[in-house]
Length: 260
Image (cartoon, rainbow, N blue to C red; front, side):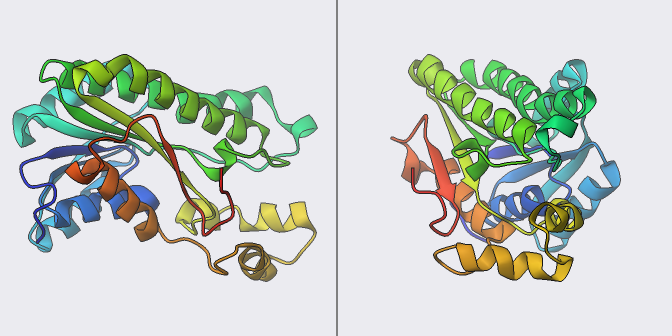
């Protein structure tokens, strides 16, 4: 076990699978006490159990990122069980591929609510805890789609651009309180969420589902898709003291696909 986050308590939203699970494992491996939160308690419990089996400290919580009372209650319970919250990662999100004209109001609202409003509510809960101690780290999950628009992703792009704006605003507002707020902008990371969209993406590009992965890889300068662990390592850097002079940034993890 490492020591980078020894003595820290970290909250991960959407921690039951994909990138959130990878961040939970990475933080625990570096000594953090990890609250794995997810709206699916079974998934959160599985990840927390794997961490404990590996010798780490983790516990699961069922938490809906759109339920403010539940978020606040969960934050209190986490502090009672694991200690003062030092790190909060707003990772929970949704992604729906849809041509703009065909995008329903329901799809728009769901995407903006989960991705952007969920991040807003998580940031509020985190700041309330951290401001009393004049220290803390918040990491918000944006995307390369928060840096550059793409067809059939209007709602997703809007939500992820919004997360970067929110991140920058909070970084300025809470710098004097010792709270650092940064965003991560992954490129194509093949998680369960992405795998569920392969058929839709294939239709969008008029290719076969089995052609989607090589189609994407050839466009990436590093010629490979990202992994959840790639994102987790960047999150570790932002969570640790080595990034103590970094705030308000939106860091690309895209193999060179996005460079601004």
